[in-house]
Amino acid sequence: MANIVPSVCCVVLAAAVVVFAKRQQGARIQYERMGSDVTMLCGSLGGDASATWKVNGTDVKARQVQEGPRLTLLEVNLSSNGLYSCFQNPDGERRDQIILRVGIPPKEPSVACRSNTYPKGFYCSWHLQDPTYIPTDFDVHVKHNQKSLETQKDAVHKNRCHVKFPELFSSFKYRVNVTAVNALGKASYAITFDDFSIVKPDPPEKVIASPIPDNVRRLEVKWKSPSTWPDVENFPLKYFLRYRPLIRDQWQHVELSDSTHHTITDAFAGKEYIIQLAAKDTEIGTWSEWSVAVHATPWMEEPEKVISTTEAEAIVETTPSPAPPSPKCRLGIAVGGCSALLRSTPLLLVSVLLSLM
Image (cartoon, rainbow, N blue to C red):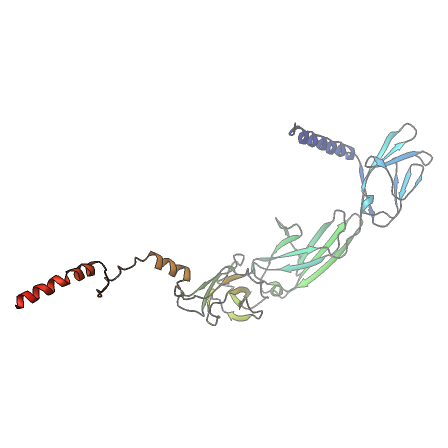
């Protein structure tokens, strides 16, 4: 019985979804600006006809004005969204269905471009500062030397496209224009740039920091060039290393050439360090973001083992005690063999006296 109830609930929910979907079939969508007064017409009914309106199958409770077959909602907001149906009076025949969607027109999008695969190409991304609450599309146009360039949509990020460099070291600027468009309006924003100004590699990868045996103030740091950088031999990268002990907030910095390893020689003995790296083309562009932080502590000598009080007591208890020494014979005390000797003393004295006679 316990398993039947959830199953029945699922069936009822699925049936409700199907019914709602069927209701929306054939309904027309009407987009309206938030805060405005919205008028919906009941199909082709004339102005003298009478109609009853429902929203999502219930009475319309929002502020409204109804004149004949027309329904006017006052100062609509997001709660006004829904499926509106009108029925002709008095027979109650449904004459129209409208899906009302309330939103706002888009504002200028924010646009940024970057090349992390120099010299192959670059990508541009964009987003809206404020939501529109209704579907909004983006048109992207890229030009270089008065020629339009082909753009390729990103497979993962919907608001990103990729562009190939048509040439290197060009004296002509690139222009990227992005237009946001929805049913209530549109807005555009454009940026221009030189190819070298947008070069920014991804951070170094596979950063490893290790202690050096018998060196209490040294750490060995190794890393790999970003895998997205396509030609590190012809377009080498330089690196920026920063490190600090966890007990301090101030970083120490080292700028390095195209080497992918470095030895820190001034670490505090026994202190845990946090280490990060950034990368940059040796001639153009800007520094990457910092790599994922790694932690390491310099080599420490193994301390001598100190025996605790509990361990010492255990050792004493398990050590066999030596046999007690034999007691010394003292006159007048009968102890073991000593008593036998004392008992035989008079006989010895008699024997000695007889031998002297």
